[in-house]
Figure 1 (cartoon, helix red, strand yellow):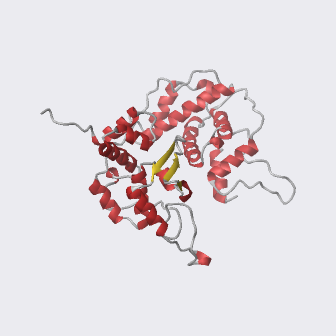
Figure 2 (cartoon, rainbow, N blue to C red):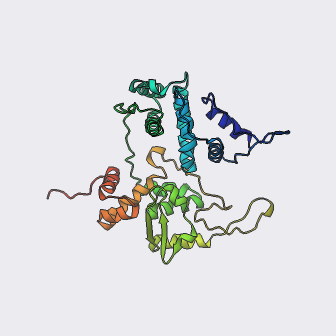
Figure 3 (cartoon, rainbow, N blue to C red):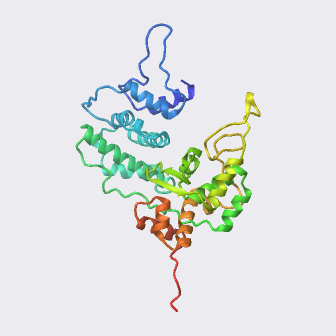
Length: 337
């Protein structure tokens, strides 16, 4: 296990008094440790498996006990990217509720309010993060009720978080073109694929040649598991032809060797495309995720049917799509006369 992961795990478990801070070794000399893997989420998942024992409710349950159980039983079931975010949020909660260690029985709505004020320096910074951490605390508390750690009412109930203004940016065609012109070819491919399909950035970046069959691009959305078939026609068909014509060269020992890869989005050396453009456009005016809203809005306008946009975006209701598109560009109406 790398030194970096060891240090991360040590920090994560700083609140776990009374519990082993490492999984048990195999004994003997020289001492043989259990490898936890090469990535952070993988290490946490393996640690949880090794440390999981028969559930025992401590006589006095502290917040650290709840956080430990949450890491063992809940986080390993999450996707790696989600687990990483939750662990970072837990670090902040532990910093507040473990210094000094807080018994669950003593945590009240007042303390949740104090946490929000402490986290945001009285509402001046990190307000969105504080809201997410409050939501995590609420979920953790509900799990504690299921585990028998407490039967007290959720202390987050009735505690108002901070207001959040969702993005209402519609990327105009000239802004999109400016970014596209400033981008290299891999990023142009990513921009075009995200816009033409209208999918979330993570889904667009994970699209695969094997998803192209029977004249459709088959998609299973990672967030909702909603399945779509996008007809391969028009500019999307041209884009896929362009993908098929590209070749890639390998770096390193076998430099110059052709790479055979099924991913649709690759850079010129076959690595995943994750870069973003700098085209003199402010960050607030253009983000990669805005292309999904632009796609839905443009689809609704061109088809004159909001349901077409709803199906493309994979929304569960027209109301959701209407909110999503109108908020960006506004209703399309005619004059009184």
